[in-house]
Structure formats: C-alpha cells, structure tokens
Length: 294
Ligand code: ADP
Ligand code: ZN
Image (cartoon, rainbow, N blue to C red):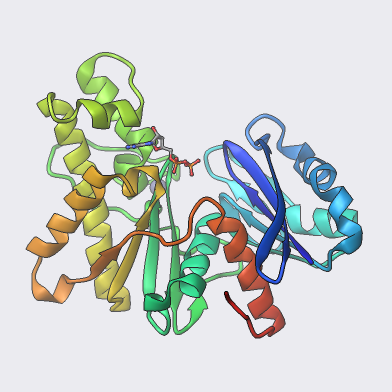
C-alpha cells in the first residue's frame, strides 16, 4: 500500500491506496498560509496510522515544488517538505506540483491522451499547469517550470495587471478566480467572488468584459503553447476553467483562430482525487512499476 497527500491552499487531503484504488481518505483544512513550519508534523499526524502498512508517501503540493523544498510565491516562504517527511515517516517520499500531478492523472486515465503531448491548465484560485511531453512530465530542479500562469499575454485595455511573481500581465493576474473576483469587484464597486461574477455576467456588461478578458488570456496562453510544444490537446480544469461558460468562451476563441493554432480542448476525466492519483501513478512510474488500471 502507498499513501498519497494533496496539499492545497484551502484543503489537505490524504489517501491510502492499494492497487491504484483508494481504500481510505481524509480531508482537513490547510495550514500553509497560517502555519507553514508545522506542515510536516501536521501531515505526519494525519497519516501516521497508515504508515506501518505503507511502502511510500507521495505528495502533490501547490506552489513551486523541488526535491529540496517547496515554496509559495504568494506567501514568500520556503520549506524542506520532502526531507522532513522522509525523516518523520522513514519512507521514500515523491513530491511534485499539484497541477503536474493532475496532468499525470489525465495521462494515465484518459485513453485519448495516451501517446499524446498535451498541456493541462487549471483555472481555479490561481492558474496552474502541467505539461506532458514524450510520455513524461516536464519537471525541473528548482520546481519553476510549467508554471504557465506566470507567462504574460497581451491585454486589449491600457490597464496593467501586476502579478505577485513580479511581472505584469501574467495569465494568473488576469484569469485566476482571485483576479476575476478582484477585477469584477472593482468595476462593480462591490466585493464579489468569482462565482458571483459569473452569475452576474449575463446582466452586467462590465463584469462580462472582465470574464471575456480572462478567456482571452487563457486562449493566448494556449496559442503560445501550441507554437512552443505543437500539442494537439489541451485539458482545461479547475472550477473556473471547467465552468460551462468559461470553457465555451475559450473553445470559441480556439475555433476562430487560424489552422496553425487549432487544438482540441477537453475537460478532465479525473475528479476530485486527480492530484492524489496523479502523484501515485507518477511515483509508480519512477519506480518502474507496470501499471494495471481497471
Ligand atoms: P482550488 O483553487 O482550491 O483548486 P477551485 O478549482 O474550486 O479550487 O477554484 C476556486 C475558484 O473558482 C474560486 O475563485 C471560486 O469563486 C471559483 N468558482 C467556483 N465555482 C465556480 C463556478 N461555477 N463558476 C465560476 N467560478 C467558480
Ligand atoms: Zn506571474
């Protein structure tokens, strides 16, 4: 048996997995913004009952994830999560970014993506991504790769959108749920969240423009990636990306683009446990285990 953990900004989930099936799972509030230093012990307490029957711990974590440490741009903090977890659990730990894990889950579980290069974009609280190329995940030493939310795109207005990474007009600063909520609140003069902005968009032109600008940004990102990777498929996930309205807005823009930029936009096939399953499958691949999927 193996343990998977999904460390998000809002929730932390963990699961005990046997033969690619989740036997048990738990979900608790995340502490990464309040008490990052305690995260290794917090995770250890969560999984300690499962450790005697487990042979590995596999972690999908939000942020910039390297083998030495994880760091969170928005919090400006760093933590040696993998080494600390190895000390505490006495088990091998595999750690990758959460969007990369979700991308890998799609690769393993969506038959249409087998032998395909593709990108997975999640438009949620932030904008995350994973890139699968030549049957492998793109990873790098310092963990800052495939962070497609921090690529910049043109904007039609004269506005400048500063991003917490230090650049202007990043996709994340325009299209994330946080950005949409912020920009819609500004044009409305009232604080609303992203989902409410979507609910208002058919009646309020200014809010609709904010969402259109977000869809433009994600489409431009997709075109840039097509020119970079030559990928035929894009998986668009996250609560914003997966919403009917946003998905269709991006799809329309792709259909209007020239033939060079045509890609097939698809929704994720994996559900709420995508990150935990993705890192589980990825750790098995690193071990060279032939997977047997049901
Ligand atoms: P997480 O970032 O924790 O992975 P989600 O993918 O659910 O979580 O993204 C949360 C963001 O999505 C919030 O900004 C929320 O307001 C927004 N959101 C949730 N549901 C919808 C929806 N149906 N339509 C548009 N935005 C949504
Ligand atoms: Zn940025």
